[in-house]
Amino acid sequence: MTNYSADDVKDFLVNNQEFSDYYLAHYGLPRRSGRYKWGSGKEPYQSLRSSAKAGEKFIKSFSKNSEVEKQNAKRRERTKAAQLEKKKQKTKYRNEKAYVKTLSDEELRRINARDSMEATYLKNHPQKQPLPKKLIDKAAKDIIVPAVTEVVKEQGKVYIKGKLNAAAQKMINEAVKAETKKTKKKK
Image (cartoon, rainbow, N blue to C red; front, side):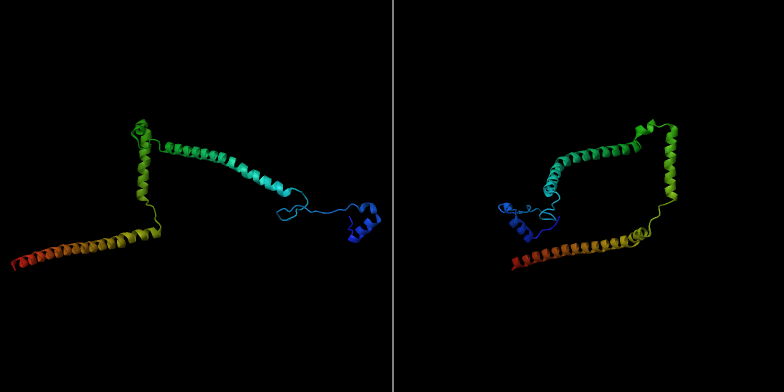
């Protein structure tokens, strides 16, 4: 396609008088938002279509959200119930008399042997504590507990002395008042 200048178009119209009554005018495209404010020209209603799709998705999300949430809640309830059931099965009647009575002698011997072996193992192999835990325990046992005990004793002594002094002062004041009343009456 060749580009014609304004002079070329004018010459054409002068030479062809039949076209002079008609003219062409370009009004442009309606303004659209986005990167190309007047539209890219590729798809005429592209911005309207994308916004409509977004609106549809937004509206559909409300109806789906409640359904999805209900499904998720049901799924969570089922998994919790399954976990509780497994937990019950693991500790099924472990400490109850009814369970012990249902066991055969061999099963009971096996359980008791296992429990005693575990107790013996833990007694012979104490759990190793990390160094900071050992230091904290030792500090609490050897330093903090005696210090707190001493402070409580001292504060207790101070408190008791204060209460005794207050009571003694009160008795002295009452005795002085009584004595002054007697001397006033004698005069």
